[in-house]
Every structure is written in C-alpha cells, then in structure tokens.
Length: 138
Image (cartoon, rainbow, N blue to C red; front, top):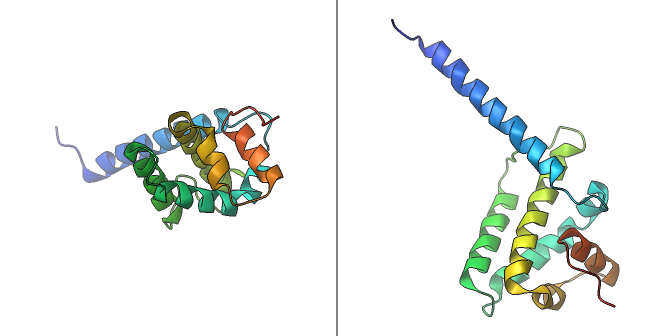
C-alpha cells in the first residue's frame, strides 16, 4: 500500500485547519466579556508602547521581559494567526493575545509596573486594567 503525496498534503492541511479553527474559538472564548474588541483595538498603539517600556524595565523579572519581547516580535510579524482581512476577528486575535500576555505579566510583575509605564490617558489605563483583570484604582 503506497500513500501518495497529495493525500499526505491534504491530511496535513486538514490538521492545520482544524487546529487553526480550535485556536480561533479559544481566543474568542477567553476575551473579556465587558470589554469590546473595538475598544481594545483603539488602545493598541498605547499598548505597544506599554509593552516596549515594560520589556525594557530591568527591575522586572527576566522571564517577564522575555515574554514581552516575544509578544512584541509576534506583533511585528507580517502574518497573524488570523489573517487581518477577515472582518472583526482578523484584528481581534492581536488584541486577545496582547490581553493574555498582559494578564500573565501583571500577575508576575504587579499592577504597579503597569501603572508606572502606561503612556496613555487615565481612561485608557482603566480599560487596560479591566482587560487584564485588575480592579480599578479607587
């Protein structure tokens, strides 16, 4: 019994498509309920500056900085997990990945680092705090 190259290629393509679909569903499910994706996308430039500032902060643990540099590298890549031409969710994957990375970083580095390095408005910081699951400052 011989296996042709096209059946192997079709099997690999089907497996990749299945994994991609599962990843899209997982990204959509873990997004915060009270924060709309559109609001998150508006914060993206300030979030990128925040990530860069946090990644350069030598007072943060090395593992945190490595995660942040990997996230910045992902954001700089010309391709995404979900292509940007797909309406709404095309850009939402970046927002969800940034949110997950920031949640991880703030758990390890603490919310004070987030507050210290935030380059945007107080309203933007409040939205980012909601995004990463930190209670608002009273």
